[in-house]
Length: 116
Image (cartoon, rainbow, N blue to C red):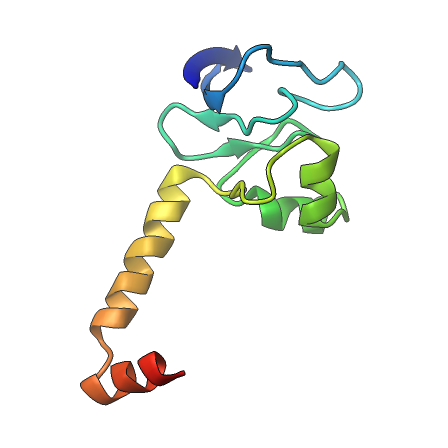
């Protein structure tokens, strides 16, 4: 697995954890490459394969703007079912929020969750 950078409209995008050969999505059919999610080098955004725009949460965007389900999108563009369609910074933000919520649980709440 490798990592490489490309330039897209003045922003540097990173392709991570890909295997050669990369298969580019044909012009007029989408953006990027089949099987990989392009992200900005700063981890702020990921690129939509359909319109090429950058978002923190591409899953929300594709459902709202393109009226396509996440499983359909992943199948169309060769992404693994487990591929998260969010940026690294968004993922870290959500992770930290969840840790903060868990820290606020009382011992009784924790026992109830463990029992469920």
